Image (cartoon, rainbow, N blue to C red):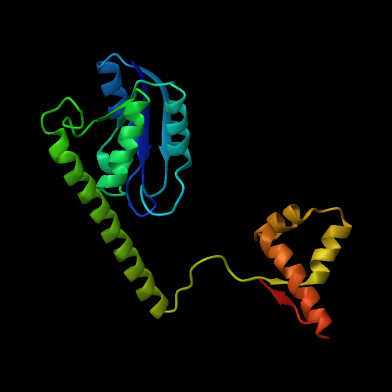
Length: 208
């Protein structure tokens, strides 16, 4: 059996590390005499709008027929998107000839008599845990803001002259952005805003 290992740690699951998951998963794969073809690791939530690049890459590899089984630590590492989306993911893999096995949940097997009963329950629980964690993070950030904390990238003063000087030295907009620690879009926006300010007769610095 060709196996993929998938490990995930959410950015809001403090104190966790994929290396807490992988050693046991490797041993389990060896015990089952699976050939571990690749390990996929994400450090992002398994729900919401954030892209899980390694997860998507793994799904694409499964669609190409490169694995027979995926071993996960637990269902909430695989998906926290609720019963419907979780079952759709599992169905996609099943149609590709790939089954998902959970190290901590032996029932996660279509041949198990409790599979159809437990899958929607555990998928629902995983989603609720994600929602509660997100609520706690938002509440913590709100309290921190009330106490004067600031989040995100520090604001920078960016003038058209500074950009022009670097352009004259042969820097690309991407290189300028990298040097200043801002996005390339911020540099482009600074130039646009500077042109607008100049048109109105002002030479004030442009802020990101």
